[in-house]
Length: 514
Image 1 (cartoon, rainbow, N blue to C red):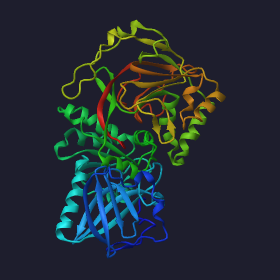
Image 2 (cartoon, one colour; image 1 turned 180 degrees about the vertical axis):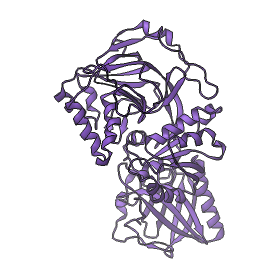
Image 3 (spheres, rainbow, N blue to C red; image 1 turned 90 degrees about the vertical axis):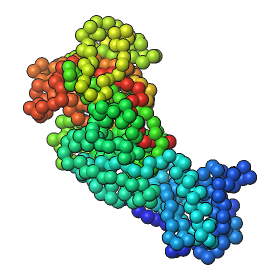
Image 4 (cartoon, helix red, strand yellow; image 1 turned 90 degrees about the horizontal axis):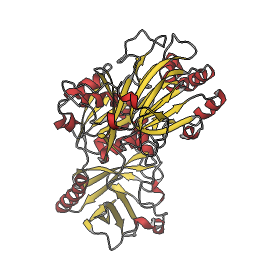
């Protein structure tokens, strides 16, 4: 839970902060010291606890203030300041700073620490001073291109069913500090977020936030891609607040800059308004399609992901428990996977020109995104034949907060990372799986790890029981259930037969920490 914690070097009062005289001005880090090169946007005298002080906003976005004892404090407006408010002549600067960042006189994000809300209060000396300071500071905040209104999905059923609590205690206070308006929608059933996204008036919002695991993000993405104005809709940045079981997308985003996967870091990334593109994979079988942004799995990983649900009462331990059970009673699957390798991986597998002849073309749909425009016939197709222990395709590095599935994956490089395991001894497989938390598994001699542009997956039966088949899982949802699988009586989106997948580079937009 995010809490308000005033900085240790101040005692909070209604009219400002009292500096701790035991601290020495030489503790100021050199990289925050003011120089003649800093062009002031605004500089004015204010009162801090009835003492005169000078507050300055410089052109590099650092808000500094000093008093007669030459003590200096500062905040990065871009990285730490959420917003400001006034009561009379009192100006309150609301910020989100790292715990421990008050070791020196200047605040500044070093990365990796917990975030805490803090407030800093100044009293303007006149109405003109009040107006000038607020206009210049707020003007700088507005120039950063931050969102002003967000649409927020909250999934109260996902993960540990903690999304509503996370929103109310961790997200909502920060949004209010940042003066960001929002519309909140709790999801009531599966695909509810997809339905809402398909018809939502996007002109009213600057972004969509999902307080959930990865599932709601995937629903929103599929809803946007089915809109008639899909091209414009995909420019709408999407954000995720970790409140599910996996949280692979937000873990990948925050870990890319060395930040922990917390709700505070995630909402701060959205508030700051930085954006990056994201590849989207179109998976199709006949007239049925699915848009994937995270992963596709068949074999061991899919079996663990889906079948472990029968042990959900064990909490997070169910994954480790069922993984060990599946390894000790290891399954292998017949089948094949054809792929178009990225440059540098052209020698993996065998040539497979014939697979293009059997590839089903993307059929046009009545509305929405029609799929990537790729000349599949003139690409360099390669092929790997089974049996397989596991086939895994990944769009981003992390599949869950503790699973770095594809350490070399990039958000917008136009390729998926393909991880294939074949003929792996059980002891080696246990060792390999134990390195999923750091990505070391891809270095195993039993793993093929490459980048691909397009894939044709032809799943087959289990090698030990030809009457039983497998599960194909994408972004945490079952795409296809074969004969004799867990809950095989349930209807799935596709059938357990050949399916095709092609990546479209940079199709979607995400909020990102930098």
